[in-house]
Length: 490
Image (cartoon, rainbow, N blue to C red; front, side, top):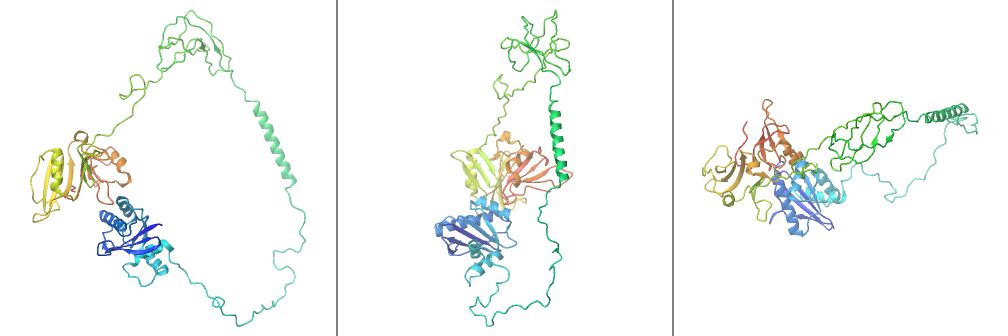
């Protein structure tokens, strides 16, 4: 049977309930506790963590993967777009969003009494899924028959009317007898209709006789042109034929054949077969008309020589050793040995792996405080145009991967791309094609055409950067991901 998981994401805590085979139970979201701290309504990564944890607990406790997901939220909870994007990232079913009031009302109408108030919304979501909304409106009227009590008084007939009506009872009744003859169409209308039909038929007969051509069709005359000089070889392929066609103009006069002249006729010869082709002749002067040159197709460098087929095949740029993303970077992407390093991972291990593929960093000022960075102690390492930031807490805490930052030469030279082939030098049109409606683009000042972009504004884990201008041809100047250091000023 269907397994339904209900999550109540409240203001302070998250509770869950599950329905397996029609049985409804409270689902503990942690070992030794029934709830988890609730994330902020705009905390996208926090919502993803809650959804993945709830699904994992459902599989672990009841050994079932939820087929449907119901998210019960307060009026000030996360919006539908953020919940949908978080569910897509967590690989859970598309959630059905339900208000707290509807869930609690469904529990009160269809569920048991005495439920803890903190568990009521989650359990109410499952009772809403089973029985629907709570009934509304006034309660039905209960009669004596419904209670099984006989009527104590006998039925009484209604009293007779005090006034006896004489004649028609309403103003719509007519004293005159109705005519038994069925009314039909008037004779005058039928006569006019018959005249119109006959007139239309006669007009069709008259117009049908005028469907004759104004001028006779062109006449084709077979002439020979032995040893004709080659005048012009058109670029389009000519159909070889030993005859010459006389083309008629729009003049109403009948087509005549021009008398032979002392000069040889102008004949086009196929350069491949060496045979004569059809030549248009002026019916008045008898001179051969020079064929118009056909437009030639420009062959691109990708086609075979001489085939005339334009080549539009383009291949995406090759990924380099480091591939960037909104959650970290990947080394040797799309290979059997690819390694993903996410923000928050062990910074020392990530640095060691990065050094094996890129070599020792060119710039390494060491650990220290930086006014532009949030952590109290950071280490900014550089490999040319790429900068990687490591952070650690006070008193020598664990080293974490915090941020990457890219600027400088175009990615076509450095091969530093995202998986969508977005890098330095990519255009705004490339960003729109790669990220679609999720992309936000803003221009802070009307006096400056430059703008800022964000590829994942809902969940807050996208790639940010700057473009030279906000039109489709605007180029990316710099880009970064991670919250380690501030990169936007002004």
